[in-house]
Length: 243
Image (cartoon, rainbow, N blue to C red; front, side, top):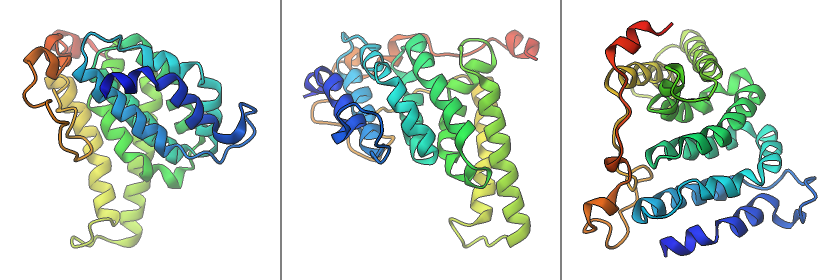
């Protein structure tokens, strides 16, 4: 099943991004949620099939890059789910292809979203803070870390302003206080990742779904690509020398 997902990604991306538009590019009503689900499934399939080319799905998606960017500009908050899933691909190891795909999308998202809607980007910012953003800030990625940092600052200012205007209710799980804590947590995650390095995550735990049958008993080399690679962790001297 995992191999079938990877084999079908080229066709699936075309259907998911163009829908009934037949490639004309005029219809911007195509939902981006199914594409995010596909990216999540493909990343997990790569964990189960370590011999497969990790960059192939991203290269297939890049061939629809113009269409994807048009959709992202039309609905940047919804598109944040796409960028969040892409940000998790640093766990399977395809840095160059990931930067090439993720960089333009982040520029579109942070450049198109309204300031008042920055709170909707907090899950994406938190994910970026756990890997891609710190790597870029220390020069190990070609992503524009300043774009992400500016988005994180904007999200914090919006959350802080809402908290000042509406007050704090500790019993309100989705209120201004929760947003302010989440916005501050983005920076805390960034700092911890710079200091301690990227964490090794269970690829099947990010959406609350159980691992597929056979994954738990798989040989160690087939359970996670990241465990076979050097986990990103900058030396203290590099951190001290960083601007």
